[in-house]
Amino acid sequence: MVLVRHFKKGWLAACWGLVGLGCAAQSAPDCKPAPENVAELVQIRPRFHTVRGPLAEFDPCHKASKLSVPTRWNGSPLPSKPPLVIIAHGGGGLGMLENNLAAALRKHDVATLVFDAYQLNGFYQGYPFWGSQATNESRQRMIYKAAKGAYEWALTQSDKVDTRAIFLQGVSNGAAVVANLASVVNPEHVRAVIPEGLPGMGIGLPDSVAVPVRLVFGKIDNYGGKHPEDWMWQRQDSCRVNRVPSPELPAGNAQHCNGRQNPADMTEKPIDWMQRLKAQGADIEVWFYDHAAHGIFQGPIDRKMLTYGTDNTTFSWTGSDPSAKEKMLADLVKLIQNSRP
Image (cartoon, rainbow, N blue to C red; front, side, top):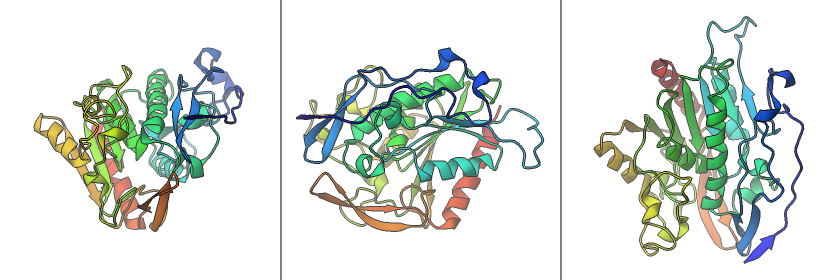
């Protein structure tokens, strides 16, 4: 294994990421800049990496963390504090997909909180690196710690948002993160969790959930597939791709399916995971969307191929037609409106 030196930046000025709140609203104790010994990249094979070492906390003062609280289009104050959707980004980091979704939600008077877990850890390689040159487990571990911290910080923002109406949405690797968070969040605050394009490998999936879960899949989501109809919700891989669970994660299927335990077995399909929890009485459903691939708010459908490392080329269709975006947004807004206390 090769330790890879990477570019890190020191603590950035507080409040850069907060929209319309002002630095005076952000107290110094809220800021959690990454320590100097924060995670390092380790090359495990040519052009493919994992992350080792302590991971950064969520830092609301980092420029990549942004809480956006909407106002009415006529400029008048909202009649009540808005609900909040925390968006956990996908494997490539915070980008157009997450920002498009956040902007669409704000038009419906929903506050949003986004962040970039990689930048919080001092990594600035960008999408070309993170999208294809790092393991799922390393990406998910960083996103999980940041997303859990974002949720905990959001609970302290009751002067800005309705902390009884928090929703967690995540795409791809972020979907695996919010699915795990659904097991540990407080249902008095979190009304629903929406994993989109959920993979079944990396940190694994939890054995129980404490809040309603609505899985989202485009009907032509084959991202990372070995053939054009290798659909994400039916995807399996060797248990070797799962990381041995850490105490920070809830109990889940990776405890008996990882590189040390049953490595020759296959991971649980996301759709089978959903059915298993549903049979146990969990409030969990799946929403499928026509004319949609992976990352419905990414943009127009792009039927591309993607190479992981140096030799693993996969089908990786992304985006959707406008009709799918409109339908997903309408479903999200309805869920938020109907779930508020």
